[in-house]
Length: 319
Ligand code: ZN
Image (cartoon, rainbow, N blue to C red; front, side, top):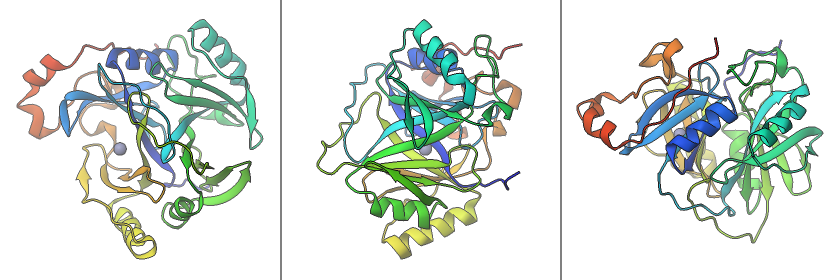
C-alpha cells in the first residue's frame, strides 16, 4: 500500500437554495452521509450542512450554506467550475440509471485524462461529476437503503478551477499544498498529490477573457486544503507569505477543524483546514448529523436559532 498522505482537498463549501431540497439531493439521491448539522458561525440564522463519508474524513466533505431564497449564481473566471466525486470503476452505468430514475439531467459520458466521467448538476445548478476509479470498490463506503456500498461515492476525486491562467495558482498547489503537475489536456492542467486516495486532484482550466462570476445558489464559496495540524498550517502560511507574497487571515476555530483563509492569485477563496479534531468532537460517531450542534457561544441562543431554521429530514443509516 502507498503511504497515507494528509495532503489534498479537505472540504468544498458551496451556496445552495432551500436546505430541505439540498439535504434530500445529497443524502438520498447521491447517498452521502449528513455528518454535521450546524449553523453558519458568521450568520447563525442559516444552516451550515456538512456531507461526507461515514466519519466525515477530510477529502470527503462537501458543505453548504443554504439560503431559502438565494438567487442563482453564474459561473465565471476566478471560480470553482466543477466538484467531482469518486465511484467504483464498474459503477458509472448504475449511476446513469439512478440519475434517470431520479429525474437528474446529465451530460454524455466522456473521458478526461483517460478516466470515465459522468457530469450533472444539483438542484441549484452546481456542477458535479462522478469519475470511475479502479480499486475504489475495495474501500469502505457509507451505504443507504437505495445505494449499496458496491456503488456508493468514495469521497472527492477533484475540483476544477476556471482561471485566467494556470501558473500562479499552480505554484501555490505545488509549493504549499503538496501537489505535483502531472499533465495537461487541452486548456486543462492537472495537479495531483502522490499517494492520496481522496481529494488528491485539482484541475486548472485556463480560459483568459471569460466572464467574471456572480456568486449565488450553485456557486462554490471556497476550497479548503488539508494541513495535518496547527504546526503544518503555520508552515504553509509562512510559505505563502515568503514565496508568494500572500497573507492569510488569523486562525478561526470552526469546531471541527481550525482554519485560515486567503484569496489565491486566480481569485478563488482558499482555506487551509486542520485534519483535527474532526466531526466526532461534539456528538458520537454513530449519531453524526442527527441533531443540531451549536458552538458554545451560540448555545444560549438555541431556542431562537431553532425557531428560524427550516426543518430538514435527516435519514438514518441503512441497517
Ligand atoms: Zn471551509
